[in-house]
Image 1 (cartoon, rainbow, N blue to C red):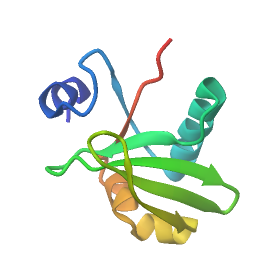
Image 2 (image 1 turned 45 degrees about the horizontal axis):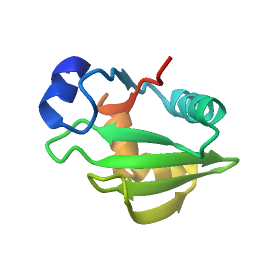
Image 3 (image 1 turned 135 degrees about the vertical axis):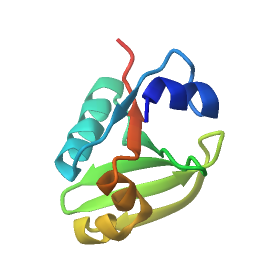
Image 4 (image 1 turned 90 degrees about the horizontal axis):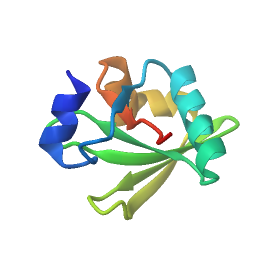
Length: 108
C-alpha cells in the first residue's frame, strides 16, 4: 500500500505527513524511543492500515508495552498493558505481521 495514497484518503494524518511502515517488534521499539527522545513525550502514534484505520499510542517499557486506543481526536478510549507475547496476539501484532502497521514520520 502506498503511504501517500493512504494518508490522502483517510484524513487521519495531514497530507504533508509521510507514513513509515513498521517492520518488526525491534523496529517498533526503536520508533517509540526515537519519538520519545525527539518530542520529550511518552509513546508514539501508530495506525493500522485497514478499513477501520485504528489509531494507537504505544509506549515501550522494559518487558511490557502500554497500548492506548485513540479516537479520531487522539483521545484515549482504553489502555492495555501487554507483554511482548500478548502484543503479538493483539491487532497491532497482527497488523505488524502482514505489513499494515504505520507511524507518521517525525517532523524535521
